[in-house]
Image (cartoon, rainbow, N blue to C red; front, side, top):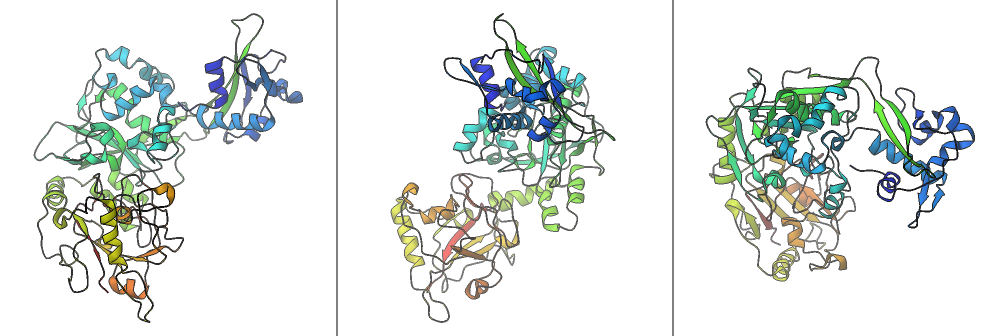
Length: 553
């Protein structure tokens, strides 16, 4: 669990301070008014009388040096500690429910004692107590762990502690999560609620299956599978942790649901989960008339008769109601949340294909992503005009073409093509336009993209700290913003060659800097378009069959 530096000091150093005030004698020191947000100002306004007089609460917040000597915190330091307690201690953390990060990690992946342990009552005793006594009386935080902070930072997953398959910063773009179970230890799955499983791209969840690339398909019948999930809209994140708890541990404890689909996580954001026909939909809300109440308390460890050790903690209380969604299933609820946005609504069709939809989904997936038969589709499989465009520079799938082994040669040859002498209509020199043709991309806008460079190319090389950019690899595997930022005017993207020549209808949205993800990440004509990127070192994007070409002068 993430904890503040103050709480960490208490836990690891056992700081000492002389008991010199009546403030907070092993009990509540501040209770906020129902509905008030947990902030330092509200904490101070709600202090008990004995703690507010003369700022007596300040005696509870001290710094400790290596020798164990204490000094009172400044007001600024106390504010930081209270804010940390509000963020990480006041909500119930998942690790408080289960006991350890590793237990959660393995559970969400579909293994560990909570799934296949020897003693159900003992292995799930913590979770059972929480389910019986507290799950509907507290706000729960989305899973986040101190053990993941450094890993996520080092691997460009954001400065957070989210599990890989549940990272709210780098995945969960569809604001939808799901758990799928294939075994019920105590209860049968609900009638009519099981689903057919279509497929899973193993590259979508490598930290669960420990496989970098590959795919699984499930034709015909398989073990009964029950999937359930939730979806939310922007601004409705307050009870996300409660909804995740409801579809995961609560199902396991109360109904015995366990064991995921082979090769896939048991729970995660839907982008990391298998494609199935349907899923039940759940939600959590505050009971009518109920609102969150935050409280702060202090406890003292009096093992030493001469000293006492204050520990300030925070908690919350609220009546939670768990129930089915307004719509009958997860896909229908998602589409109801995005009425009027047909492009976003259509994205869910890649994850929940509807009753009887697996057969067609498998055919499309295997043809487009794996075996791909060429055809006469007007926006796919076409032949690039060799009189206007270079030979294939690099590509994958049906347009397979590896780069030169030496980065210097590969990038040098590519830059020579860009510097071959293309001109504007008025005769001004410019870089030649880069074109990516993608036969397997699901979005029509991404089947033919034109990159027009406007500023000088960055220095060639692989030493990024020296400002060097392996420009071909920027398109292949590392779509980064270093010297390559649309908002800074480095380039423009277009959906047609004529638009690229005339500078009309340029794309308006771009993002960057996701590890091992190449062109164009989620860049889109009007907003984010997901998963149409290519990569030569990992799977997961829809651009499994594509090629890069350069305009001839």
